[in-house]
Structures are given as structure tokens and as C-alpha cells.
Image 1 (cartoon, rainbow, N blue to C red):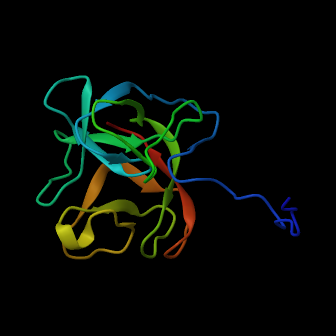
Image 2 (cartoon, rainbow, N blue to C red):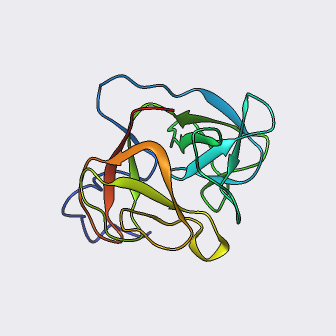
Length: 156
């Protein structure tokens, strides 16, 4: 029988998509129209109760941006850690949530998200090609690629 031979020094700070803070928040439940990764930006779906992942050529603006996918402890995720098509998930449209940085960001900067094949899944504060600002979303903490940082969404 295998035994545990090591202990982690400290638990993980958070996971991408984890809600943070006790302040006001809005997390309506939506149905996934595509495979969705929690902690990533989402678009309005074809129906009011649906959410779409950002894909190549997407635009993030006040009419298309829905919020960020929320990690839920009561959910069973696919083997790749995503929410599958036609499954429900909470979407953070107001409040604070952790995201995984793929580039540098400073507190107060707009949250920039990838909208083209080469940048899909990227979240950072530094401007670049094919990165759109998520409306109403700002970094609450500074960090570099690989860091989990808090963002706040104040208007969606």
C-alpha cells in the first residue's frame, strides 16, 4: 500500500474561477453553448439563459460580454476540467473572482482577454494584438504570468 511521504508547505491560494470576497455579487446560472473553462471570459449566448466561450474573432464589448465562468464545488467537470456543452454553470457578472494570468498585470488596469486563435485563453493587463478589454473588469492585484490574481467586475 502506498504511503504519503511528503506534505505541501501551504495550501493553494485559490483556483481560477473561485469567487473571492464577501461583497455584492451576481452569479446567474447559464447553460454552456460550447465547452467552457472556468475563470475565463464568457459571451452572451443565442438565448438569454446561455453562455458562449470566447472564440476566434469574438468581440468583448458591453453588448457581448457576459462575465467570467465560476468554479463550483458542487459540479463535476469533464476530464479536461471544463464545463461541457448543455451543462449549467454560474457566471460572475458582478463581484470579485480569481483568474490565472498569462502575462503581466498591475492593480487598477483593465482586464484584457484574448479574442483570436493565437491569444485565446490569455488574460493580462498589458496591451497587445487581439486582446480586448472585458467591460467593467479591473485587476485588484498585480502579478505576472502564472499568478492567480483577483479581478473585480463592476458593471455588466
